[in-house]
Image 1 (spheres, rainbow, N blue to C red):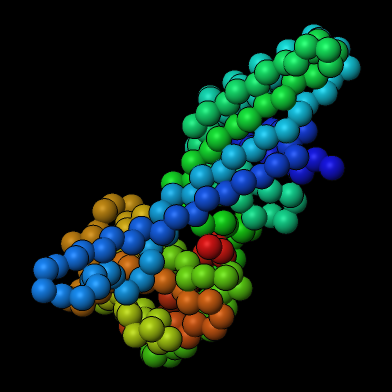
Image 2: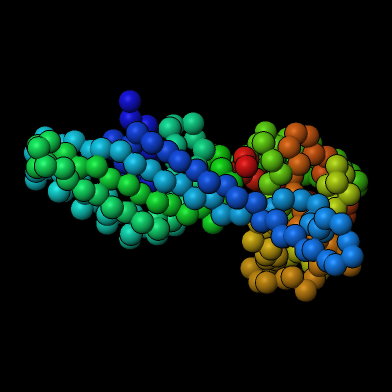
Length: 252
């Protein structure tokens, strides 16, 4: 039975084998006069490689050529895109590194072709195709605890949006009480504007401009949602502030 595979919205017909390799980035250092070696405490994930293979069958030679041409063009032109295995809404961000196909004599080669596709997922995580979010409107107390539940299988970076409603807001702080990490912003969010803190791409945008320089001492953008419950804590002005926390659940 063929596997249900799609890349960049195109169904890849006839895939019967899916192979993955997920190496870890572990570097060891050895020293004279010391037993063993020294390695980092965590095995960081390296890029994931995926190999697909199978056999595609079409009604006639013209249909087969058209399908292979469309597949080749999509794999190349779309570059890095979403690769889905089955239909469980999880995907890899992948790019094609190789594509080959062949015909065998004596097997009606005009309408049957064997193929192989190689992908590289430089970001090795599986992601949910639906973004989760928690919106807290009209903050009325400082500190305010915001419960955020990450249903993914590993930690994931959030996007934090703090919007000033009726008047400007100066000096806000948001912490992940579950880890102790925090981000403080010492600048001013103009009325109607949003402070956007992107922990995935390490960007801070406020009032439409780059505002990394306005982060307070001790702030870190390397802040993640741990699997399960995370208690975020907001500290700052309480008149006319909305907070929206968004994230993509992911799995290793």
